[in-house]
Length: 251
Figure 1: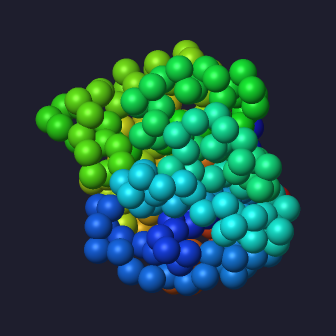
Figure 2 (figure 1 turned 180 degrees about the horizontal axis):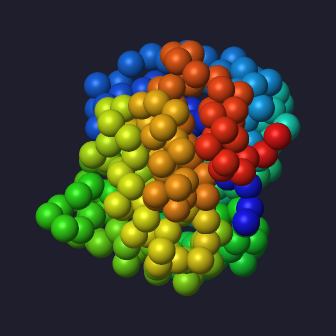
């Protein structure tokens, strides 16, 4: 079994890291380059940088910020937000990203997944799914959680995997920023139906929540924001706790 990964998430708006609740009420959380360096020094396995308003504002991801972050960290860097073509993805990879996260554009045109996987390799293509519960299922939202699509999250995950996605970045909109724990039912449902890794996001409130994402949600990695940004825990704290729970993590 592969070791589980701990991935700090930098949601960026107007050049600053922000954090909200249920995708709204954003608050400033710091400078992206400074936070990226801190998490790298603490032992993060990867970093994820999401330009959260790029798609809604119909603009490209801020390449200059990506380039600055890439200069201070030497672990895999995933970048998403505003990527609408394979050329956009290449620009970010050239700026120092190791993976790109596709969401809105991939829902609009799923062949983008195929094109990016062929050009850059599946390992570089992550499909971000922002999902909100509707009854007994979950609906996919795009444009930074602003627009419902009518797509079933589980079916979309299956399709994305079949088209060449290398990983799924799964965010529960209902749990985002609430610190009520990950949506374990959603995470497990998608982890069970696809063979590619699932990154759980949205809702981490304490160390037990992170452990449960792995043990009960069957996630391969967890995305963490608030717990790290406001120094409630360090990456080392999380890894130490998981090791005590007999969950294998990277050194």
